[in-house]
Length: 267
Image (cartoon, helix red, strand yellow):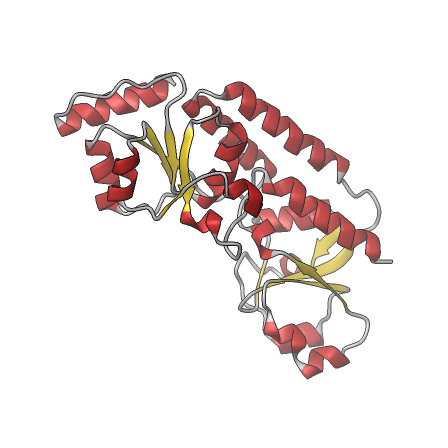
């Protein structure tokens, strides 16, 4: 909280306005879909005033729909946020400069969350939000739950090669959270073994020429429905909800549950 208070004082000094009082549990508006899920899990009752509009869209949300429905959604404009009068806004690093400037000039602290690529980064992000929002104990409890899930899903037997094929023909490569989830769940990343990074495009002919044991499609990846793919032998196909790959935090146990379920079905 000292960091948040200091930030509020500095911003107010720069804007020429008197800083608002920052309470032990500042009221929050989240404009970050990954922040939505974390804050919904750690915020005190009534502290989270609104979440991003992404979390009210089943195709874009990493939160269960019934949980997201408990909170109003914000479109992310400065006008909407200012009308809610929060003490703090949690946004992504790409927040519009004009929006950020308007919020800071109103004495609202702005905290940004980036993407995470490891379990450790996700836990660090949860801890940081816990401190900033006055909820370190709740954040620690959430982190313990995620760590317990991670440990319980550790796959000790021989991994099988898997290609995680996302919409548009892109793959989860080394250095991504999706890659870490795959390897932890008993899969050897077909893409990473070929030097492909996160978001690399893999043509259909490359998959047919060098097929993995398993193809996991996340989203509407039409290439898997190509007749040539249907004729390929020895490739097992499974589906994964793409919403499980958007964020870390509370999404990690759900992603591990599904990947573990898939791995148990592969002989």
